Amino acid sequence: MQFESWGLLGLFASAFISSTVAPGGSEAVLAYLVSQQQIPLVSLVAVATVGNTLGALTTWWLGLWAAGKYPAETVLASERQRSLRAVRRWGSWALLFSWLPLVGDGLCFAAGWLRLSWFSSLLAIFFGKVLRYLAVVYAFI
Figure (cartoon, rainbow, N blue to C red):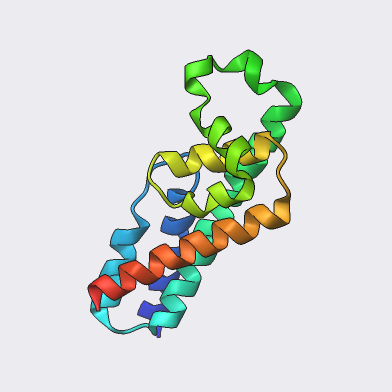
């Protein structure tokens, strides 16, 4: 039972950190825990998804905070506004890809900066991340 608690806590921390502006490797932690076969897969996917979603929402909130202080068009050069353009074009649907390395953080930040609906952002982020973690579990079972 102790391993399960520490494993889930480590997975949550890794997933949270991986989804903020800091680099991380929650997929590797999840793959390791799947290979150990000591924690139910549903628990692993749930913990990883919740941690990663909360991390992405933290990035969303940072974008919202930044929007109040710095208008996007005045801070970023036009060639550096790729995430903003994608989120403007696709809205919350773009956040289904928030799991992508490097790109995902920018999408979440842009969504907050553009003041997209928190709830629709949450749903898109959550579904994108749960599908990604299900794929990781499937690859390692």
